[in-house]
Amino acid sequence: MSKVSMNVTTTFHGNILTDIRIAKEAGFSGIELQTPKLFRYLDAGFSAESLLPHLEGITVTGVGAALDAERDGEGRERFLADVKRLSQVAEVVGAPIVQVCTGPVDWNVVKDFKAGRLTADDARYRGTLGLSDADAVSAVARNVRDAADIAADHGAGIFLEPLAWSNINRCAQALRIIEEAGRPNVGLAVDTWHFWTVGDTLEEVAALPKELISVVHISDGLDLDRANDVPDQSVHRDVVIGGGAIPLQQWVDAVKSTGYDGWWASEMFSTKGAEGDLLEVARTIRGLVDILVS
Image (tube, rainbow, N blue to C red; front, top):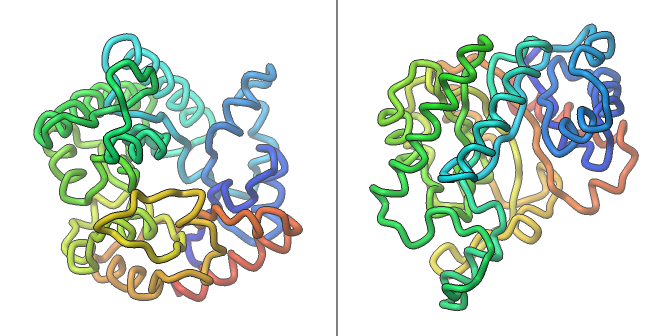
């Protein structure tokens, strides 16, 4: 069987236990556990250990995500605290990797910045907007280095996912961050939506060292004007997998050409798909991903 994992966005409105059950019933061999569902479960007073009976028969392929990886000051401490919390969960459930993402998570901040509407007194988090590329890369690399050390203490690695609307959003930047971080347990997610949306190419993916690819997220999206549009997940990712504009088979084949033999995870942010029967949605998506990666 293919190494197909269900990211819990596939069953968008479920809770963590429902997601695990659905993933198993739908035939996924792995599951990628994610916040806010994961933290919500823990914050309700349940322990990570209490997940173990539910996880019998399925592999936890990763946990995430610690967001806004470039934060400094008190924000940096909160970021690293999230990394530690996720790493502790990873150790308990046997997950090999912990996800970190660039920011700001709020794409509306990026829209306002690029339109000149983000004033100096605007209190919203803006990440590395306005910094030079080199300074922005270094800010992420510094935190990724410390995050990797925390994860290593719990037997895990870190995988970086640059978000498409962030100014740290390209494959080439991720590779520089990994090099500058200088830790052997850091890799990246090849996410078909983020890569395709920002204009990264199949050739760039095919040139990746396979050992740097921690996971492949298979996610579809809608076309956009890359020169003028800020990617908006609520608009440009609002489609079921297989119903969008991304040539998913080409992206899968480009990854395969590297020799990658790891996990493929389904991710979906379709408002219509999220309102379907959770099990039927999961079964349909699992079948589609199986066809793509087989």
